[in-house]
Amino acid sequence: MDIEFVRSVDETPIGEWGELAERAGHVFATPEWLLTWWRNFGRSGRPLIANVRRDGGLVAILPMYVWWHRGLPVLRFIGHGPSDQLGPIGAPLSDPETADAVARAVAAIPLRRFVLLAEQVGGDQAFGPLVRARHLYRESSPVLPFAHDSWDDFLRDRGRNFRQQIRRFPRRLGAAGRVSYRLASDPARLDDDLEALFELHRRRWDGAETPFLRAAGFHREVAALALARGWLRLWFLEVDGAPVAALYGFRFAGVESAYQTGRDPAFQRHEVGFLLLAHAVRRALDDGMREYRFLRGGSALKARFATADPGLETTGLARGASARFLLATAAAARGRSLGLRGRILDRAPARP
Image 1: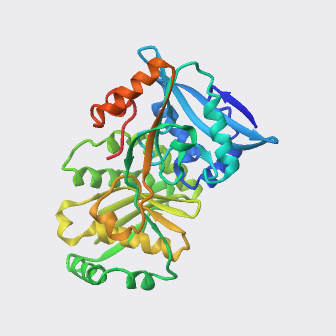
Image 2: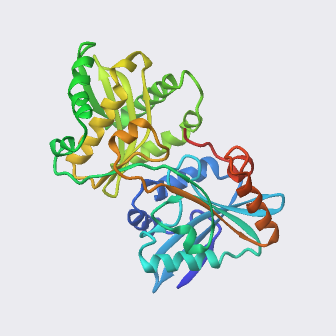
Image 3: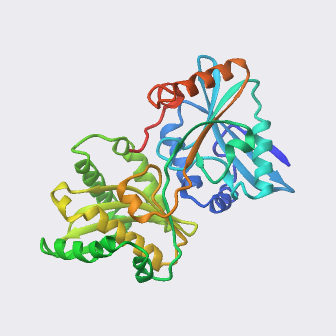
């Protein structure tokens, strides 16, 4: 294996990076997402990206960057905050070659002392045990693997109440006006569609300026790139042509993901959030996606659809006495507001 550490986000070939992102299986590993993140949020750090090759071919990327806490180098994965999954970019770590590449890259980090905060790595990746990192916490990340050939087959495996609501809620909403679903597809209209999403999200949170809204500029850039690549899944549920619910997500590498939502509280009793999510899941199933991901964080709505939850694991690795002390202090605090992530390391806006 040949391990090269580069100190610029532009030094990894985009084509090879994109191929590895496909193997990773999520849009948050793509150069489109991570380079946009760097332009928006990376100014306070210095890239330290490990490119691991075997026989000239790129096997894995560790997209890290460094900043300093009281003189101590702290490493994080590029993309934290807005991203819902982080970690090495390449085939799953169940692949022996990829696991070997990642373990060697972490061991070869060219710093005498550091803390590596490995946030939100897929729980099925076993990254922590691979590099002997310390477990810090786990977050929910519900998933619906598609095991049905049709929407009718899917509904047969749901509870009776679920099936009744799928039929009853659209009829009830229909009494308020003409109901339609629309997928954003026109580049000339995208800015207006995103503004509608942001406004519905703001209404959903009673006018609060959430971290998602504070990152609106980032999402405008990402959404435009995703639309051009055919990845964007920005759905609207409309009544008489006016949007009453929005679902912002992505379709990438055979997987569809629901990233963020918004809805008009005036239509709360009509369960427009449930109806729009059910529509998006149905379309993903009909179009041959292999699974639907509900992303970071659990909720009663996600639990109604999901059948699995591999979770997201955050681990920490320390080299050097001062680094071990910092990591142990953060782990002992446990609470997010008091721990390493909340008190020391949060430098980019998180997603509610």
